Structures are given as structure tokens and as C-alpha cells.
Image 1 (cartoon, helix red, strand yellow):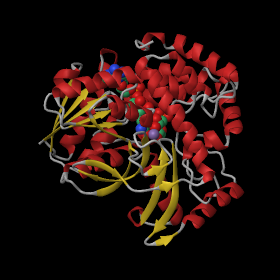
Image 2 (image 1 turned 180 degrees about the horizontal axis):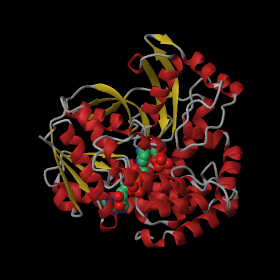
Image 3 (image 1 turned 120 degrees about the vertical axis):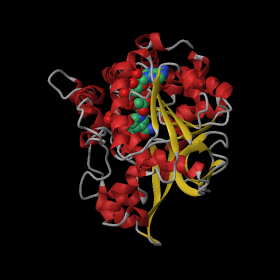
Amino acid sequence: GLKIVVIGGGSSYTPELIDGFIRRAAELPVAEICLVDILAGQHKLDIVADLARRMLTRIGLDSKITTTMDRAAALQGADFVVTQFRVGGLAARARDERFPLQYGVLGQETTGPGGFAKALRTIPVILDICRDMTKICPEAWLINFTNPAGLITESVLTYTKVKCLGLCNVPIHMKMTIAKLLDAKANDVFIDFAGLNHLVWGRKVWHRGIDVTASVLEKMQDGAALTMKNIPDLKWDGDFLRSLGMVPCPYHRYYYMTDSILAEEQAAATTGGAGTRAEIVQAVEENLFKLYQTPELAEKPAELEKRGGAYYSDAAVSLISAIYNDKREIHTVNTVNQGAISGLPTNCVIETNCVISKNGARPLTVGTLPPEIAGLVQQVKAYEMLAVEAGVHGDSNKALQALANHPLIPSVRVAKQLLADLLSLNAAYLPQF
Ligand code: NAD
Ligand code: G6P
Ligand code: MN
């Protein structure tokens, strides 16, 4: 049977992942799920592992759940490695979400300066994991869920030989939400996705052979459609959607509604406000872990839906199954462009529809992006490529260029201030600088 290694195993998302393996047990013979964490996460890890065991026992599966702080030992014999760790924990995320606000810049964990700080903290760790994998399990697949997922996957695919796919739940979440809007079965809906992680568009939506894009956009205007638990549900502008003719992802609000979201964030972050998303998640997580310790609980609890990662298990486990079973099925993943989007470097990482087989991902041809979206994609990709260089080499010239080129940062003056702040706030996690 397969050995699955989960790095960041103490995450409150782990029961979601276990649920995915349970639902696909017939196609994926899993012998062991090894949950890896660090000392600081041991308490969470033990709680999550116990719940995972109860979940498996309840439905009579005999896959083994093991836990360890010894990553190298865990990687022995691994077939798939799933990364879902958070360097610096939610406290670091809360800082990422707060420090840009004083300069009138968005505070978000993956988009803008907050995402940049998270990338700098994460890159040294993911490269370390890849060094271990190259030595210990060179044939294993790395399914990277750790954010910013596109940028982290680009670091892995540019600087290591590890076989890696980057995964986000936004595409599957859009598919499920759009199927509901259309009152259709999810399996009957096909979305032509292309773009970058958290910057992906549904260029066309098909329902059993019929192009239904226009009617999806029409329905999206009625309310705060297409959002996720972690993103303010601001209403889309109807004229804008109609003229765009493509379905933006929930994260596009940060680019298309920057002023409104910034105002919401600033209000939430002041005394008496709801707090930043990280601060809200801290409370949600505390409740989740209380619940996880209930001996009678042997299922993924509904409360987990308060997190942004809905359908994560579906995306991850169906992807693993497509590789293992050589399904040649279409999934939306982060992988090397290889010319799929012309105008972007062939070796950069994009988020797009790919045929998934035992050989990995082959992106479907996209061609030239229309001017409505091409500029934003180019600019964010340039930022990401500079951020990868900054994060891998600890290069402060590239770091300044990354921030100065980011479309959500208004000036070089602000870019320099943001950089100085984030380097000092995160000094404990930036060995490369
Ligand atoms: P979390 O704060 O619960 O962290 C998960 C675990 O990682 C913790 O138990 C922590 O101790 C552990 N950890 C920290 N540093 C580690 C290291 N060096 N090695 C091993 N483990 C380490 O985080 P979470 O909210 O569950 O999110 C986990 C990650 O998944 C984050 O990076 C988050 O951004 C990402 N995520 C991605 C998506 C997506 O769409 N790609 C969706 C949801 C979450
Ligand atoms: C979405 C995104 C993730 C993000 C998450 C945050 O699912 O795709 O990349 O990390 O939400 O959720 P949270 O509950 O942690 O705010
Ligand atoms: Mn995501």
C-alpha cells in the first residue's frame, strides 16, 4: 500500500484530508498516513492523529496513522508528500495582515506584502524538505498546498528536482459554487481555467456542451456570489463582469475592489473591530481543537466549514488518485507553463487545466490571454519571479524589485518601508537574509 506523508500534520485541515482518503479508499490503497510536525505543533498533532484514527476505525479502514517530529524518518518509503505547514504559525500571519495597513496597502496572507513575507519564511523550509526528499524518496510526488502555493511551487520546480504539483482549492470551489448557481450537477460543469494561483479566471464555463459563461456572469451579479469564508463577500459590479466576459476568482476582489476591501480591513483591524482573518481563525481553531478532543467525534465536523479550505480534500485526494491510477484526467493545478500561456516565460509556474497521469501534469493549451487580463497576469508573474529569487537567495535587491513591481503597492517609497518592516518582523524566520 501507499505511504502518504503530511508535513504540517497538526493542521486543523488534516481531518478534511483524512475524509478525502476515506471517500476514495476503493481506488487508493493507503497503508500509512504519516503526520509530521515540529515540537511547537506536537500538542495539535496528537489531537488530530487521535481523531484521524477514530475516523478510520469508524468506517473499518485499517490504514495506519503515525506521527513524528523526525521528518527524515517520515520520508523513508514515501509515495506522496503533502505539505500544509505554516512557518511562524497564525501569529506570523496576523502580522502579515496588519503591517501593510498603516501604509494604506492591503493586508492579506497570500496577496501583496503579506504573501511576500509568508513566501520568504516558507522558501527556506520547502527547499530543506526538497533536499531531504531528493536523498530519501526521490520518486515521491510533492503535492504542495502551502501558501503562497504558486510561488512556492515555482521555487521547488526552479531550484530542485522534486516532482511537484501546487494545489489550491479555489478552482474546485468555483466549480462547486457555479454548479449550485446553475442548479447543475458539478460533474456536468466544465470550466476553462487559466491564470496564476489566486489569480485564476474561468475563461469559459460549459454545461454539457453549452457555453453558459454569460448566464453565470448574469447570476453572479445578483449577490455576493463566488466568495470563500476568508474573503469579504463584496458584490461584483455587473457592468464590469459583463464587459470582462470571464469569471474572476474570489481573490480577484483584492485587485478589482482594492479600495473597498482595504477600508473593510482597516475597520476590522482597529480596536473594537472583528480583527484580521488570522485573529478570527485563531478563535475558530481553538473551538475546532476542543471539538476534535471529543471522544465520540469520529467524523470531519461541520465547524471546519468556517475555514477557507472547503473541498481541499477532494482536490488533493482526487489528484493523488489521478497520478497513482494514471487516469489522464483533467485537474486544475500549479505547474510549469511549457508554452501553454503564450507571452509568459515557458519555465514559470501557472495555475491551469492539465491532463494528470502517472507522468505528472501536461497543461492544456491556453494561447494568448486577452488584454483585459494579460497585463495583470504579466505583472503579478513578474512580482512572483522576483519574489522567488529574493526568497531563495536572500537577495534584498530582488526583494525591493518584487515589492516595487507589485500592482497593489503604490510607490517605491512604500515598497522600501514595507520591506524594512517585514524583514525585521520576520527576522527569526529568514535565515537566507
Ligand atoms: P497551521 O497554522 O495550523 O499550521 C499547520 C501545521 O504546520 C502546524 O501544526 C505547525 O506546527 C506546522 N509547522 C509549522 N512549521 C513547520 C515546519 N517547519 N515543518 C513542519 N510543520 C510545521 O496552518 P493551517 O491554517 O492549517 O494552514 C496550513 C498551510 O496550508 C498554510 O501554509 C496555508 O496557507 C495553507 N493553505 C493552503 C490552501 C490552498 O488553497 N493552497 C488552503 C488552506 C490552507
Ligand atoms: C482559501 C484559499 C487558501 C487560503 C485559505 C484561508 O481556501 O484557497 O489558499 O489559505 O482559504 O483560509 P483561512 O480559513 O485560513 O482563512
Ligand atoms: Mn488557495
